[in-house]
Image (cartoon, rainbow, N blue to C red; front, side, top):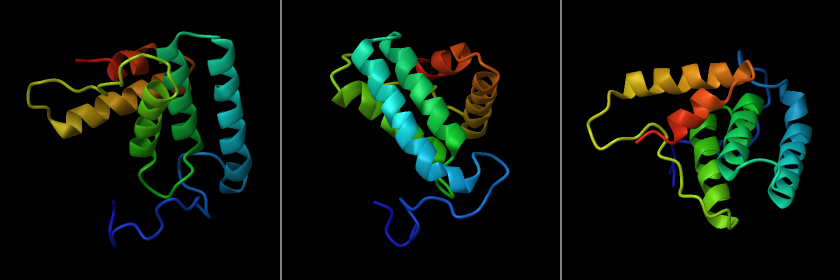
Length: 131
């Protein structure tokens, strides 16, 4: 998928970055996140979209990889919805049929993530379902 460009793809970070968890905690936090989400899906504690968005946000917050964390988390949130039988359509992630300024789209996404960091996932959910 990535050819020679990302030799480190799939390998957890081995140093701290300006965002994300302490790199030494990643190997504990990712399995804990997966267990939490499995419980939420099994118990249907929230609507499907909210479970998937919470999963996405927590995975981005952990920031397990040196790069590509947002792309990975968006892909996995879509897989969660599509493959685990949750029945909802995959997210559009701010997509639309009109041309979009990629920089503006990224700024909107980051602003929504920052609101989620403060406990409000509604902007991230709206961004994920934007058409």
